[in-house]
Structures are given as C-alpha cells and as structure tokens.
Image 1 (tube, rainbow, N blue to C red):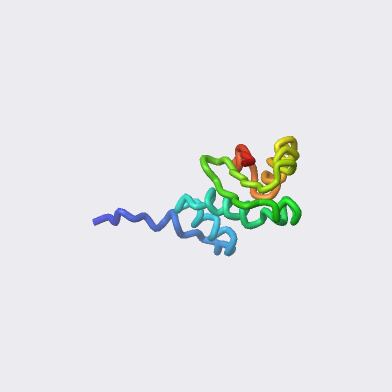
Image 2 (cartoon, rainbow, N blue to C red):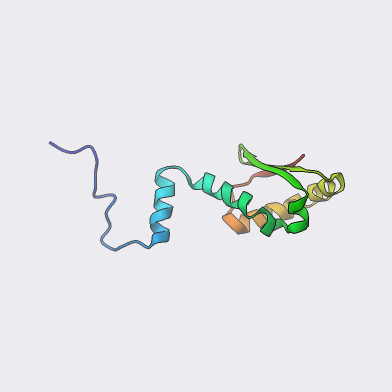
Length: 105
C-alpha cells in the first residue's frame, strides 16, 4: 500500500541552511505574507524614523494595504505626498508586492 504522503519531495541530498528551511516552511504554510507584514510593522520606527513613529498611533494591514493612523494632520499631509517614496522603502525592506498601497488616517 502506498502512503498518501510523499517524502521524496521533502528530502534533499544536500543539507539546507536554516534560512532556506525557514523560507520553505513559510511557503508550505502560507505564512510568508504575514511574516513580511509583521516585519514592516515591527521595523516602522527604523524605516520611517523616530519622529514619524512617535506620531503614529496604530498600524495594521488590510488587503495588502498598510493602514497608518497618525495624530498629526500636517504630518499626514506630508506623508500622503511622499507615498511613492514610502512604498519604495517597503519594497527594499521586504520585497515588492507585500504593500500595494498606504492609507494615512
């Protein structure tokens, strides 16, 4: 009787690095996008700088859109004008396709 689980696809002749193994696990369990989203939220102060991070009240993702709640109207206006540059920074950090748009509230 054949097993429904095929092990030959999971075993490689060469050992994998830890990074490769983790990336394969993310892909197998469809976690890559969630991890990338968490990376952007976690690195928000480093990517955008401390002055912007201290005026940010909430960050979350919805349908590949990063929703950013701010407590400063002038900063919100300035960030809206800088949206292409911000998307470029995110693409450099985690790759393209993770954040398709940024909405400032």
